[in-house]
Image 1 (cartoon, helix red, strand yellow):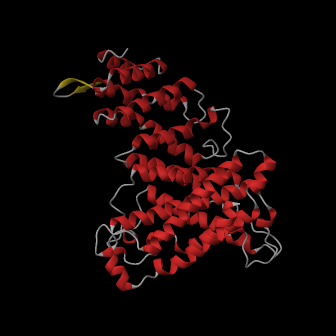
Image 2: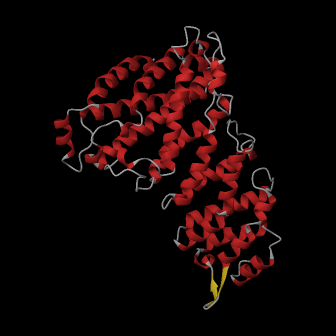
Image 3: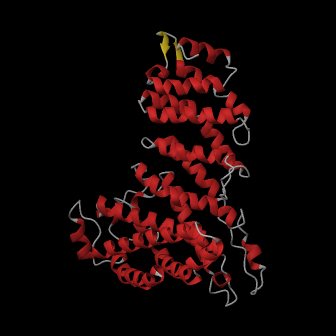
Length: 405
């Protein structure tokens, strides 16, 4: 009831604020940008508040529906509510990404940029949430396209919006967002790394997008030729995200390799992706198993984990080092070979040897990063060695030098 009552109010607020935000008066913009601490004007503040309120409302609504039985869920999320959300998103879509459509990028304050990015993250999650809810209800009145080709169904519209959202997230994770849309007008990739807080805000959207691949029932896009051969009465097959899940995983792995801060959160997310298939209670749609590109990215990430442990221990990031050791122990104990092969686990031995002991050409024997770890973290590493048995000669000798075996 609340969603239906607020929908026209939120929509009107967006329609009233958008013209002033995206085509503001030049004199007003110049005045606003004079202070480095100035955020968006009143129209931008209203725009942001409405998007955040809509997201909070729909998170609650989707959560309640997911946790309900079938009949009760259908009463909690009606076709009218989904249609209202679709209309709301369709009014925002032409301006997304918002940082590229608000004038004055060269003079924009950091506070204003942060608020625009906050808008973008909320819109991205709302769009993914809308498609997830639509797939869950599969209301035929929302999927009907008999009124003509010019009026696309809600699902088609959302798929187009999700393509933009997917590209935005991939570019953000790869640090390839154009700087001209954020701060200054120099172009190229933005210099600032994605913050841990921003990555955490992206996680719900990423998870929704990963799971939409199977829900929409297709992997590859139809070609233009196939679309051209359809009759007017046929609904074109648009249920595709063009390999977006694979590109998302690749981008997350790339981001993990470059991230200077917040590696523990990113590591935890990737690690969970690799063990989802081992949980009988898991009911999500995403799985790396049928995706060779995803498997390749995950295996490359896995083989680099000894280096991650090294760097974490040297930087005294004991939490990350301990998390990696515990994960590797879990994978070796499970030893199912579904995603991480036996060869991959055997390949850990050589790079792990220098974690315990280094034989330097001029300095002789040097204790590896293992010696820097607190006793509790050292215990986790020793547990990993137990599950890696039998150890290859080099790793065993290095571990013995460090009194780890």
